[in-house]
Each structure stands twice: as C-alpha cells, then as structure tokens.
Image (cartoon, rainbow, N blue to C red; front, side, top):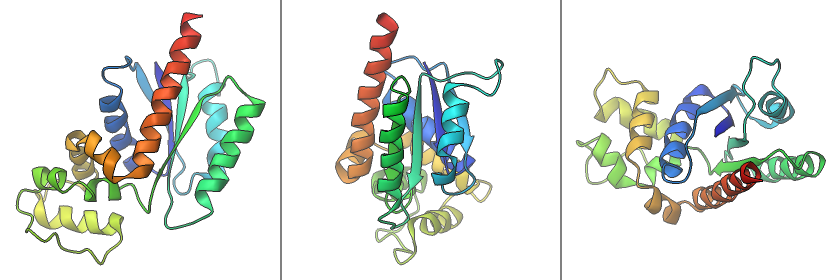
Length: 198
C-alpha cells in the first residue's frame, strides 16, 4: 500500500509516518509514504495534494492508495469544519479517492505531552512535575527536549523518538482526535483492501 500524507511541515511528516507504520504494522504492508508539505496550514493545499496523490504530476510519480490530511487545530474552531467539509465534497466528486483527516488540538506535540511515560522514556531526567506547562505544546516540547535530552538531538529527532515509543492504546484514550483518526484509518485501509480483492 502507498499512503500519501499532507501535513504542515516535513517535521510532522516524519513523526506521523512512524505512528502510522506502527499502528498499521499488523494490518497491511506499507510500500512507501509520499509526502506533501504545505509549509504552513494545509487549507490552501487540499486540491494540489489530491492532484499529486491521486493523479500524479507525471507518470514518474507514485499514485497513492489513500491519503492522510493532517492539521494542527491551533485552537481554531474553523479549521476542522473547513477541512472535513472539503473532504466530504471531494469524496462526492471523486468517490474513488480515500482521504483520512487527522487533527491535533492544539498541536501534534500535545499527543506526546499527554503520554508522560513516553516523555520519561525519551527524557529520563524529567522532574516529577514536568515544567513549562504555561507554554503551548509545540514550544513546551521543544524546550523540554533542549533541556532534558542529549544536546546533539534536534527537536525533530526528539519527536521521532517519542513517536517510536508512545503507547498508541493509551494515546487513543487520552486524545479523542487520535482515536477518531485510528478508527477512520482502519476503515480506509479496509476499503482499499476490499477494492484490491475485487
């Protein structure tokens, strides 16, 4: 299976690949992931990503079996409805294209901050009361990584390590958006597998 991922940055892509690969490990063989970085909010890139993923810009580019559209919500009440509305309208126009939305409130990094066991496995020197709780998740995780990990690790390296160790079942309990994503991704994979059999 080939999976396309539209996300806000390359940083999000690498960690999301780790999580999706782990989640689907017993379900399907993933041949490759195809990235599409919006370099900011994905709203303005929805159509372009769909074209890239499902048509390809040329015959040399891989088409995907399904696409994941990932967005931080940043506390906005508008992002999720705008993206889900676009996906619904797109599905009516192109029913063969399977797009799975995933949202993180307010940021992707919150998933890892919610899992303190995961944080402690990557940052064993964290104090009992994890500091910087006054910062937004993105900045908080960056600051924790700078203070409590090997100084040669980039923030992206820290996030990838967290993605490799986070307990996905616990995360589904703590983060409703992640649970919803897992359910929709499972359904999407089954749809692709059913089409392949037919």
